[in-house]
Length: 601
Image (cartoon, rainbow, N blue to C red; front, side):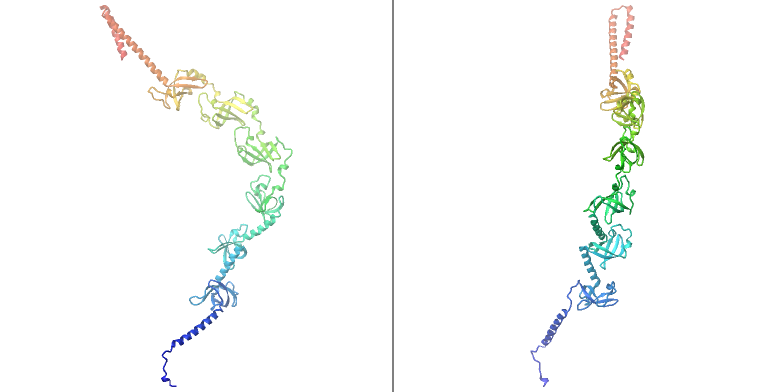
């Protein structure tokens, strides 16, 4: 064939030949790709799946998860288990199916962490008991590893039901725990070993309490001692002996009766099954001391005991352990002067007393110590007869007088009106002070009501008998104003006696009022011996002086008028007289005129 003359077809499409080949090739590729991808496992990124270790060396491990390519993880993530080898199954976390280099990114560490957190949450929700490894000590507790790689915190208070002083003894040990708290935001986990113990204790308590009965006697161990009582371990459940149930006698602290770890028998007084509380007693195992008290003991008998408690109102005396009597403060002295029990005795003193009342049913006894001494009021009239003089001690003040003590148990009253004959005393504190000695005279004795009426001013004669003759009405005396009020002034007169000047009687000659501290003349205008009252006036003194001046002026005027009348009469006579009488009359006239002129001057 002659190919030289062959010419190409004008309408032949050379590109169609290539496209057909491409279409054929792409379809085959798609089919092959689809068939190939069916052989892959289906998974998504950020998912934990199972893989197989293909190979492992010191640097890395190749893991097949059924993907088109194998993934590589650092060998450090597998070092926690040196037994890993090719063919072992492990869990891996798919970080990315294909990175920038087309590599499948896996992590065994993240897969373990995610799985561990799932198990932690499940254990918390179901309150499961888990096992952990105490890794190290930290501030306030311990660090515990749970589920291989989750670090949790074990507070010191959650290690045991008893206080733990040394945390180091728990380090590097495996223990059981309960997850008690999870903070998802900060990925914190708190565990407790104490919770497991408490669960066991609660189960033991429920079992023990279900078999308890009131009055049952059990053996226990002293677990803890406080100021208010003792906790007893009854073999898994604790009971409390209150301090008042330790001894029939009075004690200051439980350590006086029991000691830590001591084994003792106790009796069950009461229990609350719901609240798991048990009340125990120790003293109830012995008879009550009142039941063993001497049956022959009666009122009026003398007993001895020790002061165990002091109060303001009295003192408690322990006759025998568990039997006490009260000495009221009023039974400590015959004195009516109120004092406290501390003035007579103190805690620890040994005292003797008389039984005043004894009630065995109510287990009460009242005692007295003043009954050991004779009652001073039985012979009061003989020792303190009316009119007798004595020295007393000031004990108390009232608005109406002074209470004084003549001797222990004998008090008397000096009325405020019996303190002074002359001074007006508003309050006894103006006259004396508490604790001072004062001389008194007995005015009245009331032995039945135990009252003595005393006086102080009666030690002297009544000065008002003398004042009556000195301060007579109309007499004038010099006085000093010692006090003033809106009604008038108190004036201190001679001999220390006080008078009163009403306000209208304080006006001076210049119409001004007398002032505090001024010394002036005062006229007595009223005197009352019975009421011990003197009323004086300064104004009356001024008025009398003015009256005397007026009377003097009237006399001089009358004399002057008489003189002038005589002179006129002489003048009239001169005209009629002889020359022999003239000289005598002229001389008389001159003398009279001189007297008249002197009177005018």
